[in-house]
Amino acid sequence: MKFVAITSCPTGIAHTYMAAEALSMAGEEMGVEIKVETQGSVGAENKLTEAEIREARVVIIAADTNVSKERFVGKTIIEVGVKDAIKDAKGLIQKAIDIKLENKNASKQGNEIKEEKVERKGIYKHLMTGVSYMIPFVAAGGILIALSFAFGIYAFKVPGSIAEALKTIGGSNAMALMYPILAGFIAFSIADRPGLVPGMVGGLLASTLGAAFLGAMAAGFIAGYTVVFLKKIIKLPKSLQGLMPVIILPVLSTLVVGLVMIYVIGKPVSALTMVMSKYLTNLSGANAGLLGIILGLMMAFDMGGPFNKAAYTFGVSTLVAGQGSMIMAAVMAAGMTPPLGIALATVIAKKKFTAEERESGKAAWALGASFITEGAIPFAVADPLKIIPSTMAGAAVAGALSMIFKSAIIAPHGGIFLLFIPHAVTNLVGYIIAILAGAIVTGIMISILKKDVVVKNEINV
Image: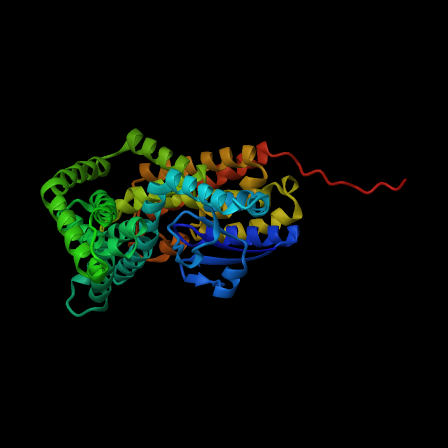
């Protein structure tokens, strides 16, 4: 039996490759030939050939972003979330086997599964597609801005200086593109390539009108569904159909989105964004701590799933070029502590872990330091009732302390490496304390809750 698969998560880092590895290992154990293409942050790897797709009985798509299905016309497709492949790869492959072997209506059943998944997760998937394309722009822009501050907090004001160039590249250009990219690829996920023009124009309008992240989200969805609607109602003779993607759809959809953004959505959403921004900026004491706790719990609850990505997206939305965000700082601190806390537990409570888990704990140090929360997933899958509450408690402590200390960062990623850039983190000492405290809480809780590993001795009879 031959199968092919594609894995893709919003950030294109951990989940993408964990799902691919799980499917490959499950296929090997079940005696099934399966090739997995990963669509990660560096693009498509291990790319499927036309011959491999043609020979495959079933196509498995484990993704939380929009994956083009143009290559798989006529094939049976099973589409699930990326975490489904990580948790139960064998069950997913078995489902593919059963669908193909049951009867001649297998293709129909496969389509039913696909439609059910897309309908249930459509809006989330469209949003995450936009976010996945936006994150590299924000990360590149934020880190370049941080590097400009390394020359001095006001060095960018010196004309012709390297600091000014870095600030211009990062703030005025890379980060300036985040709203058009977000809206454009939300629309692309909904309506394919015709959605890009109205989506990106709507996102740019959201930026210029002050509607920011919420406005860009709205623009993306309006653009995508406007294109879908126009495709349904506009019927042209075959001789004129070539005008649809080049002139008719871009012009009409951009007109609709532009007018809606200017006259309907722009000003109200801009006002709402200003009120939210002012409220969040003035948070202090218990209120700030409570928000940090909520963000921490969300980051550690599903470690890369919808709650985690919602908190992260919220943090990104509070970033402004050249200005630190306390929300983003709390999110990053809370996202770093689960793998760091687990790594600590493998050191201070070795009897609670197998030799393989202790070895994996070494990698968890690096993943946690790099702000890759998914490094905790293998441990959470093995013992969820002990690990997940422990990581949530530690992340809540980290998020709360980060907010209480009023720590702020100017980039959405980078983890521990961001801490070495001068002026990139406000209240650096407090921020380090928050991360360490969260990791220690997680490590101690795991040490208390987990039972010692039972080593089975061989008994000679």
